Length: 182
Image (cartoon, rainbow, N blue to C red; front, side):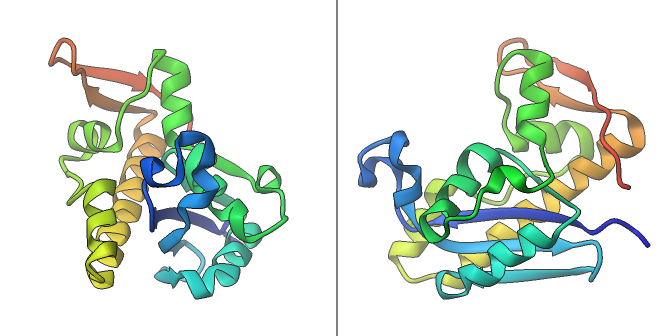
C-alpha cells in the first residue's frame, strides 16, 4: 500500500505585528488550512471551526510535507491542541534547503526555477482578504500554495535536485535533495 503523503499549508487571521511579534505565532489563529492527500487524491479545505479535523489528518499521515510548516504552521496549530507536532513524520522543504545552502529561500524562488510556476499571492494579501471576509480567495491561494509545494517536492524527488534563482547574483542555483515519494 502506498504511503499517504499529506501536503499542507495554512493562512492566519492576524499578522505577527497584530499579536505582538514573531514570538507569539500561536496567537495568529488559523483562517484557512489546506491539505492534499496522496491517499485520497483530494484537496481538503479547513476553516477554524474544523481545525480538529485538520489536526487529525496531519497526525494520521505517513508523511506531512510543507514549506516552513515546522516553524510556522505547526506553531499556529498549537493554539488549538496539546498534541506534540514533533511526533508527526515531517519533511519541511524550506528547512531542508536552508540546511544545504546556509540561508532561507522562498517557495516562489524555488517553484519558478524548478517547475516554472509562481505563487498567486502572499501571506500579507491573505491577511487583507481575511479582514475583508474574502474567504474563497484565501482558500484558492492556500490550495495553490499546497499544489506548488507538491510540485516542488515531486520535482526534487524525481530529479534529486531543485533550483532557485539567487537574489544576490540573479543566477539559477542547483541544490541536491534526497526527497522520496514513498
